[in-house]
Length: 448
Image 1 (tube, rainbow, N blue to C red):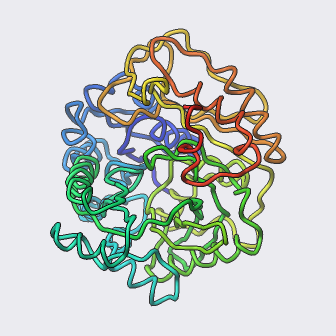
Image 2 (image 1 turned 180 degrees about the vertical axis):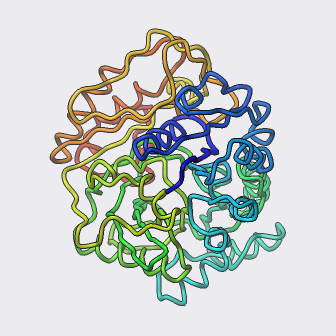
């Protein structure tokens, strides 16, 4: 077992990882930019190292600074969290060459998952139905135009080097393609340090459903069920739940077994998420591999009782999974709201500032993952996520009622947050009845 782990991230996920490490008796090293010196993960970690200026490219994306911090503090392993360098194969390789363990899949697996053309070929060879699209990254506007004409509009541009809604654009007609490529590529470069994009046919009004898997280095794999992630704004998930109100046991088994077959085919180990689009007729299209812990992982933890970060650390240390497929049990229903420092009344504009009069929800079945506290200043340099509010209920109806209660308890001044938006969603008839897809918020309309 590791004695010391460096966490190459910030915000709530860094706090989340610190907590599991403490429970496992592992010392932690936090890293922080100049803008994050007062963040909660810096206070909770056993040690903390400044790695640069506020901009991500000068701090959290600086591989050399992070590896140097690990060496100086005697850390044996690095946990990348999500975002930033979590899906960066060169960073995983740099850790290995520096004698550090990367707590995640191998660099080779990350590279395969990130190379969309190679991943598509692997999936097609497995007989997995994939979304129609190109065979590689787009090298020119002319190539994109020809491919889009062949696929038929609408098409979607996606970043090759990461996810989370960054570097994505839906294109409905040829006149928007050139600008869409430029914007998506620019976003991808900023978010992931990689401007490459690819093109797929856009599947209209699907559900976004993902399968959580775990795999160790001894050939053991499990899937922990699905998460429904269809409530999205600009491709960013806002509300997630487990299980999905749309998935029956037969479909769950089919998707879970497909996810594991993909993992085995690319020798994927550690925690990972296999993402699917599912249409109204329950046709399943494999979308991509997310080779990291997901923002929404707590809903899976809440219904299975499995600490996913603990499993990540055990696997990276050479251990075996602590459970087998037959031992996986799902109990009840969990829902997560991503609370962002944004103004829902002003087109979700970011709202940095100093937090005042903070009251966080609590009570039975309520979990809050956050890095904020009274008088904390939310910086303007990073993603606006400040809190994840997760609830558990015996069934979906009771989970919704509990979330309504929890949202009503949330209080904060000094910044705008998305809580009022979430309250309106949880009063919506279609949402309550489970009639959702990735276009839900477009129909929600005035509810925004």
